[in-house]
Image (cartoon, rainbow, N blue to C red; front, side):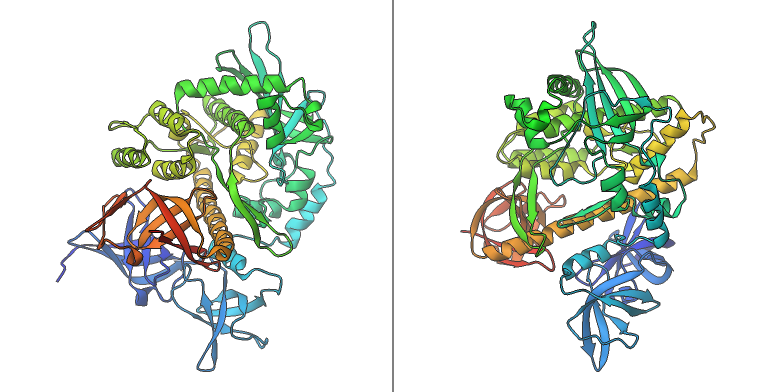
Length: 628
């Protein structure tokens, strides 16, 4: 019998595993996870905050019991109606609940097999509506699973409509409308919140780069209904085929978006960049701009790489060589300091708007325009972090911790599996990371390597206490350049505007700001997971038409249930179940980088040939088999 070594009373957050059990995640100086057995999990939902007793056995594992609901963030559940012994239940998403919940249809007619949206009333679900004939039930499940808000209150919408009547007047701002200004985005982008301008080098060789950002803080007042609902969302969520904006569409892609040939209020960060790429001075001010043209990444890259001039590029043609110069200078500066490139190749999904089905999934390559805009935005974000911190102004900083020794060892092993020699030693530095980044740049296996690399480095987060951003080799960093899409940027804009208006009574230990950072971190994680789940569903739907086809792939993860491999051509990921592998039984090492069997082994980075066996669009799962 296992002896209990420790017992504690805690408050934690429930995480539901699709296989029926769960975990209690407890934050603190030493975060821990406690196992929740299926019977104890039945009354609870993923993200529930519960009080519980946790006990630790002699093997070090924790188990939770005596769970009591403390707080339930969820208000809605989506699922399929089922009938049992004449009563209706809802089969809820198994990543949210491990059991079916009774349904109160409130006298409405509903049939088994229908997908419904319900509200939670104690331990019962109340029918709110059925999903429509043209509605994708899997999309509704993803939205509910990650608690993504989809509806606005009447009050918030009325405020948004009223704000569209507010003019973009000069009102004491710096007038930059005569300065050639351009935006560079993907063709499908609707919420355009960053624009760039440049002045040629002066006698000292320094040029001036203007990064002008849409200024929603000049329109949306703090603590109004509109602001509260934007804060609750914390970020826009981009689900393939559907965008759920942080601000209502009439603002985010309409009145506040930096469309060409219209006046727009902005907050401008002006950087002076010397010939060696050093940012020698920063000026920040409210401005009025007028974009001369909207470029997409491909036509911008066509000029940067080959000198091709499209009609849109022609409107700012005199500035284009200086944009290229500014990008090269900032690139040289970042190369001296180290770090990793953010922009990465990914799967581009084309969704048919009429059917909601994927019509194409193909590799989307990063080009010189993506790299240029990334450099400009990173430079502005870093400059703003330094500008605020030097003035003693607390704000939401973006931090990324230095990887530990085990992560460095894993990354070096994985690099070797891909055929690259990393040789990091026991400590990873920004320059050694940059040197490795240069090795893989342009490699045919770069997407798979970079996906593993970014997972190994771990996620960044928002906090108030100053700390480094390791991945960018930045002593200080924040988000400033996307206030139409991220509430963190929106809050930074408000802070900057308050300082420019004369405020100096800052509290360095403001618990409200710390609470906002935690909230944004939590909602940003939810949005990212929803986007990933939706992409998996769309990709599974796409691969369902390719059953039996064969592809080249790379192993990107190893798990106890099997191998996860990514296709080289389209970046689609699928699982090769453990029980389909010959040469076993297999054992997985503790760090999940090697899987060894009696007659064969697998490592992260290994090249494999796979055949598509099955695809479940509802679950977002693709199953491969080794093509041997």
